[in-house]
Length: 300
Ligand code: SAM
Image (cartoon, rainbow, N blue to C red; front, side, top):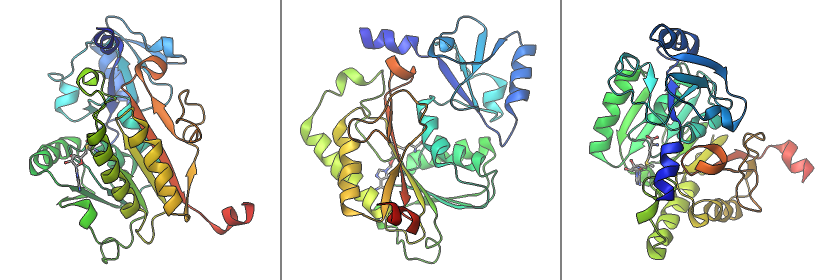
């Protein structure tokens, strides 16, 4: 099918885990193994790779791109935790949230933890990273992943995020939240065909997503939040964000990566979308919300 062909055209993306190595060292290692480095990509066409060639991504510097079928599961750099096997689109949420070292960060729906490990890398393992998930099996996969990645600043909690008390002393200080809740998965190229719109399911997912988002915005010291899904449905993306903003006038949308080509559906062009055709990734949605300051209030 066209979608399967689309999948084959997606580059194999790898995130270099900066807790363990640097992009330079990873590139040198690969060159010594016979890979051919073509520098930093500048256009979407530079991400069409063949054989042993590879590039550094143009948007997210810790990402390297390889030809579509390259498999790193048996590679030393993966086994040693230097490489995290993650689609480029799924690296956007942590990259956009960008919590500084020393900050207090909450990952609301965290397992299996690729984004958590990315957050820890951006924080240089300094600060506090509170991670929650409901699913015990996924949490156990997550512990293995975080151990291999050398993450040490986290605390894993087997708990329903909707029941996490924002006023509890251990949560009151949270400044950054990444919210990547369960979604239809309709953006995943390989799943797309069986995820045709089941309206009842979408409505129930959207209502869960909105509850999570409203709950997240109730953390008293929250300054920035990223909301993301791997869905292409407006109901789970722009509609959830719009509904939430209507209920929370203390937060506003911030433009995400202005140079990114695909934007949220109108009128939410501050948000970004990703897709095989326009960004050579799976389908994805990212919104960045920020608490309004007095300066914002003066402008509006
Ligand atoms: N952020 C993860 C990553 O990058 O590896 C992927 C998260 S996945 C899209 C959504 C997760 O939300 C699932 O692991 C699911 O178990 C979890 N989840 C669903 N409902 C939840 C709830 N009420 N509280 C916490 N986690 C929940």
